[in-house]
Length: 357
Image (cartoon, rainbow, N blue to C red):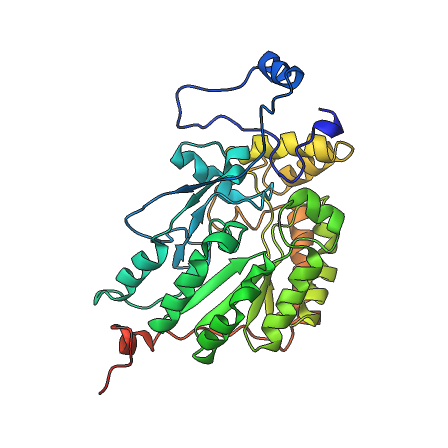
């Protein structure tokens, strides 16, 4: 594919087959050429927002190596377009492709705050940190329009319930006052994802995310306001951003992060085909080297589904990355601790206000 045909502002460069669909629908090249000759846009590259109405909003996380008990996602699909995103495969359950559909067909759960409040009011519910998002970014561009994450944060505060946030969008600062109210009761922690200090790399890997400068500013502003921040330096992709790990850790620590986490990229399900197609167009000179290095981390495959190993990787390349992370923690996070969140306040606010004893 010629560079001028590269779909700018998107990660995936095509849709891939949905494994749950028996029939495949695709546009033929001769039809696309006809549209070009006729002056019609066969593909407008616009984002669609599609309302959906699930019966529940909070998911129990059963994977033992994810590090969270519960997650909730106000949106399905993500306009950020991160090429490596593990959540792409979940779009297939909704009948869409993990490729371009994941970035351009965003499912919006407008009743999320209502469903959350119904759950937190239940006598049977025992408080445990619920993480926004865990699947797709709760502060992706759609949030500026729909404000569903903001509504949910108000519910968490009303019921004094702990909440974690994972994002790579500076839009989280819009809700700084709510976060400060939550943090007053030790009820919130924010995980800011940052994968590179190179804007060129960021634009290729994560085309519609906040700039690196804005993300570092976000870490500093949150930290300066006393809100605990963990930096997610993930995923580490050998041959693309692995050489930056030490410098990344140093930089986020200097901006106030209390800890950092990382994973080694794995290209499970349809993501493997999407990533291969992307890297052959975006980085043709290093495509084979990167793919071989990823395989070296997963026993000769680009994917590994084994709990406890899949995100850590194994082998010499993976061990070098882990050694850099250990060194980074010793040098830049020696006296820092990310605090736990309180779960004891919620019982006193089950009806939305302080119970009198």
